[in-house]
Image (cartoon, rainbow, N blue to C red; front, side, top):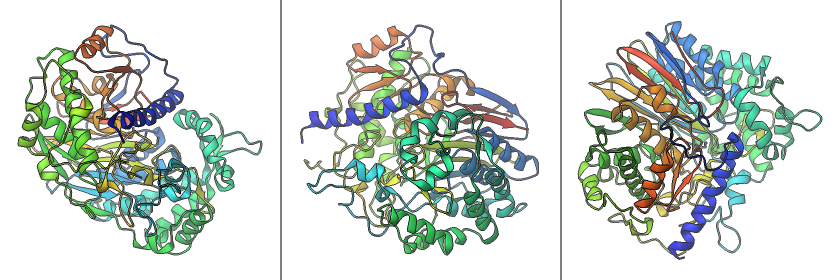
Length: 584
Ligand code: DON
């Protein structure tokens, strides 16, 4: 296949995603303006300042539940686990027990660590699972069918985090209890749930088990002000509270999940569920201008790409460069890191990923040597050294937590699309993911986020699909300085990059860094996306260097915490309604 048609394919997939994003957020078309870094289409982050602890999450009740655990003497992990279970009830489009994610933990006085609770492919999945009879990638299979459902990791991940790194002052049951009550008694539909349900209705309405929960008798979806009662989910959570994660992975609930997936045409078995393990992994480490970066290693591409981009940028004086030049260099770094992502990254338990090489300062220096400060490098001219020759051929949510002892948690978890595949496993209340679209169904064919990949990320039994989720903690002198991360598929890594550089290089406060418009380039399609808020002149300057720039709002939500003069300042990203920073 020619590079040109490849780029078109990637551009089409990405354009679909952006169109979806615009639908969700009602953003208008081109809106470049000359007023610098804040834009009414994006809005202003809600911020909170506190001395003792902070939780910033996409939904206010779940954020408050976490803050309450901190207030009652819990540590950041206790609070994250309580918030994680609560979001499964209060933010059903992405908060979940039917999906998976990553948790990065900074331990005051201990080794930092990460919990990989990414979904795995059922044993019956293979390299051909998402192809049609002609051998072409079939997005219907990988996005809309039960074949797309990965074995959920969230219950294993949150339980492992609590068992090993919780304060010991709370039982798992105590941390799950608020979620059980909210599921049993019901919540009032509001904010982003009210925004997303009408858009995702067609996916949910396909299955009676989902319609029963999210639709009314007249066939319309629950709207702002309606009660969302999730009795089956309350019972599932109660079983986990009483009997631990085994209650999810073995026995009645596991049987119901497997039966629901199979009845919908998928291949997950009770053995797949029984075999699931969350994995503790050493964090992906890096440095940037004297700060330490603690982020997520493969099967996330986030940490590797983030550190690679920061290493490239460290060789420039971003602080003093004109903004157009700063953005240009950032975009050049993005193209190179996303090319490496496509070629080299995948599940480290199955393929060998050259993490040390990709994140070394010398590798970044080699990339930097090829960057022309005046001319954009076309995507087709970027060839990662050692890359195999290509053969022819939303939704997520992030929360950040910090406690008074200096422990911090950065957690991103997901169902992939908004409400995942849309299927609730009958009798369990569990909304199931469609995470397996994150595999490269076929070399060179873009996934829903326009990302391409090769053998390293081919579908395979038991394999974890490559992710872009980038939960990250930046340390200064060994102590948490910034806790950040975001949803947004391929947009995640570049959003995190810009929060980090806006704070470190531009000296912005966290409210400003989270609200500031962002740019994005993912190598393919060969195109820069810039949010409204950059001046028309700045866009022209980028175009003058040879980049094609499209101005669009980018759907990310970097709920972050910055430690400022010894105090915790939380910022809830304004791009998605309902997020809250709450401290005490
Ligand atoms: O793991 C990933 O990279 C994707 N499944 C994340 C999807 C996502 O962020 C959707 N949210 N808007």
